[in-house]
Image 1 (cartoon, rainbow, N blue to C red):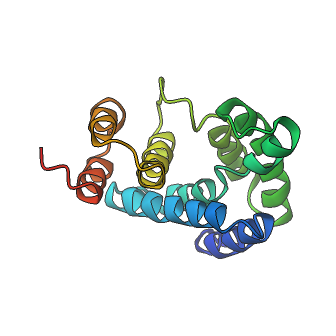
Image 2: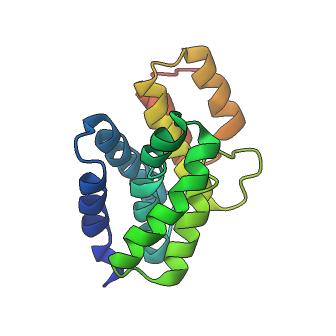
Image 3: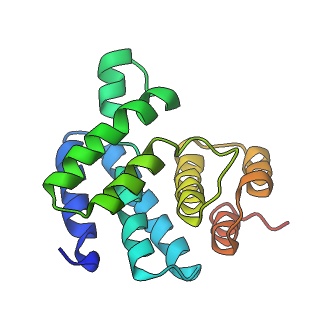
Amino acid sequence: METKRFFGPVAAAMVAYDRGDPHRIGHFLKVAGFARIIAEAEGLDPDQLALIDVVALTHDIGIRNSLKQYQSAAAPFQEALGPPEAEQMLTALGLPKPLIERVCWLIGHHHQVDNIQAIDHQILVEADFLVNAAEGKMDLAVIRSTRESLFKTRTGRALLGQEFALDD
């Protein structure tokens, strides 16, 4: 499978996985869109772009099992239960093992924002926040504060400012 062909098969598999949950499907598709915008603008290479596409689509794959097992979608539950689900899906789709391993690591850490050290992690966190802030109707003060404390990419900061008309 060529790098450029990962998005479609993974997106289709995730839509099937989250069948009947339009909110969840819409969420991961929006995160994937923002992640791709940021990754391209920040100059990531084709392999990194493929990784960003896959992880953005699968980042919340642990939620379904977390709700079943714990009646909660709390971050620790979904981060623990997501990587095995993603590994199974992505292996069945024939994705390369190193890509799967990195995607699983990112899924298992995508709510851990205190020590982000790689651009793929940074972009995933920023894209997820861009969507969560709108879906959760966050207060503008919280959004501004998060922009200052969490957003490191030029593109992510610009998108957040544009999405919420942060003129300061």
